[in-house]
Amino acid sequence: MKPRRAPPLNALRAFEAAARSLSFQKAATQLFVTPAAVSHQVKRLEAYLGTELFERGHRTVTLTREGATLAASLSEVFGMLHLALDLTASTCPGHLRVSTMESFAAKWLAPRLHRFHETHPDIHVRVLTTDQLADFGQEQVDVAIRYGLGRYPGVQVEKLMDAPVFPVCAPGTSRRDGKPIASPADLAHVAFVHDQSAEGRPGVPDWAAWLHAAALHGVPADAGPVFPSIYLAQEAAIHGHGVALGLAPLVEEDLQRGRLVRPFEANLPNAYAFWTIRPFGGHRQAATDAFCSWIHAEASTSPALGNAA
Image 1 (tube, rainbow, N blue to C red):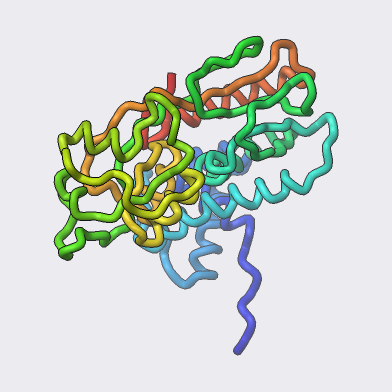
Image 2: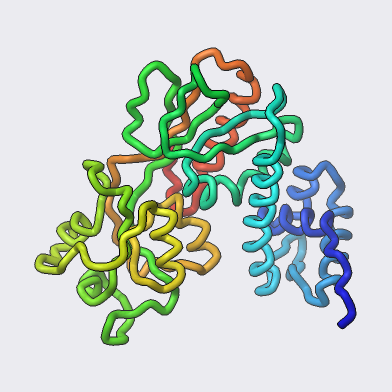
C-alpha cells in the first residue's frame, strides 16, 4: 500500500480556526495572516482529503457534514497536543503552572487550551493534575481550578462555572425492555452508573437525590457499577454501561461530539461549582491574570451552561 502523505499541519490549524468561528476573516485575525491565506490553506486541506469542508456563500461559510466531523475531532486533538507538550516541558520562569483535577483537565481544559496558546504564545502552561487542595506556599503552582463550595481561605477565589447535574448516556442506550429512554420515569428501567466521588458531599446530587427529585420512589438507587471518579463514570456511560449523572462542564465536549446524549432536559442544581484559585501577589502575576481572564471568558460561552459567574 502506498504510504499516505503527511497531513498539512498549517492547513489543519487554519481550518480549525475557521471552523470554530465560521469566518475566514476571524480566523485570519486569530492566526495573524490574511483571509486569503486562510482560504488557501483550507483549499489545500480539501485537496488533500478529496472532499469539501465548507459550503461557501456570499461572505458566509458553513461546515459540510465532513467538515463538522473533522472540526469536532481537531479541537480535542490540538488541545491534547498542547497538553502533552506542556506536561513534558521543564519548569522555568516562563511556565505557568495550573493545578486541576484530571477529569477537568481531560474533559474541559484540554480541548480548549490551544486557544490560549494562540493568543498568548509567550506563556507556556504546564498542567498538573490532582484532587488535593493546592498549597501555594509549598508547591510551585500559580493557578488552581477546583470543584467544591468555594470556601478556600487566604487566597483569591472566583467562581468559574456552575455544575448542574443531569443524566447522560451513549446514543442508542435503551430501557431493559428495549424501549427508548424518553422521560425521567424511564430511569426505573435502566442500569445506573455511579460516581463514588459524589458520596459524602452534601448538596452534590447522586442517584438517590435524582430519583427523589423525580418522585421515582421505590426505585433502587444503589444498583449498577461504581467508579471512583466522574471521569471514569462518564467513560463507562460512553461505552454503553448505563446512564450516568453528568456534570454539565465535563460532559459538554462529549455531548457536542455525539459520544453522549441527554435523554431528557431535566437537571438538578449542584451545591458544588468550579472555581479558579490563586495566591495574593503571585510571582507571575501578568501571566496568571491573562490565563484567568481567558478561562473565565471561555466559561462564559460554554454551550452547556452559559452562566459563568
